[in-house]
Image (cartoon, rainbow, N blue to C red; front, side):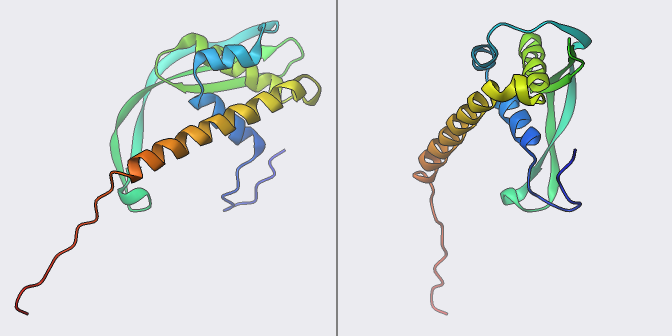
Length: 150
């Protein structure tokens, strides 16, 4: 089921929708999902901490930036599909809803309507990141040094 080759940096469709769900707000996921399907909670939402790594300049050497809270959840739909989620913060409802969406997206028949919604949500997130990047770029200052009397 894994379409990636070792060492590949290309993301699978599931990695893309999982990242989109992780960045989405609870209200966005509720709108996307609609009425929650019948399901069983295999691992109730629980909150813990993870270490966040950073990179100098975005591409430099890794360093530990600090810890953050993450909530995870695992559900199983009535058809047997399992859904997983990891969400920053302590929002247990968001983690459960994201796991339900993940489970439904794995089924071609059930998830077909959701795929379009996920694509639109990903586009909105990308546009928001680009707007924030453009706004930050307007404040960029280039420093240089003048050498006197060399």
